Length: 169
Image (cartoon, rainbow, N blue to C red; front, top):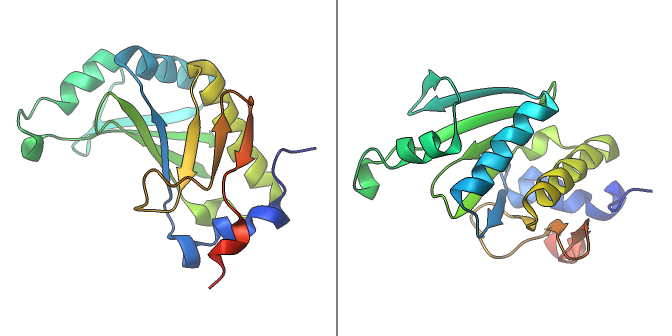
């Protein structure tokens, strides 16, 4: 039985209520954690594409990714490396290296409708959280620090962190 049931969480996945791109984050990361993520993407055999400032590039290492993120010098001139990952054919997850200290990524709620897709997302969160030994949290777009659900590293499972009914319009 899945940790989350679609009927219990579907309000959290309503793009009209929560925005289409919730904030997903792993806090307290390092370049080494980013490298674990890159290695995971490769070993899982997921299709991926890497770009810096919109220019396609070869994905080499997390250290190179961090260097590219800081190449502009001052924060207003910096570019954001993007790693687009498809864990399944029509589910895109976009990792963005804004800073080394957190792994930030987007999922599109319109691609996450129904129990089957929820299970794919939950398994993805578990795989990342277990590989890094860190929690993964997802919350409404523009609401950092207020997660709705995520992988809890201590509980070793994906769980709800809010009452989904609180999102009713």
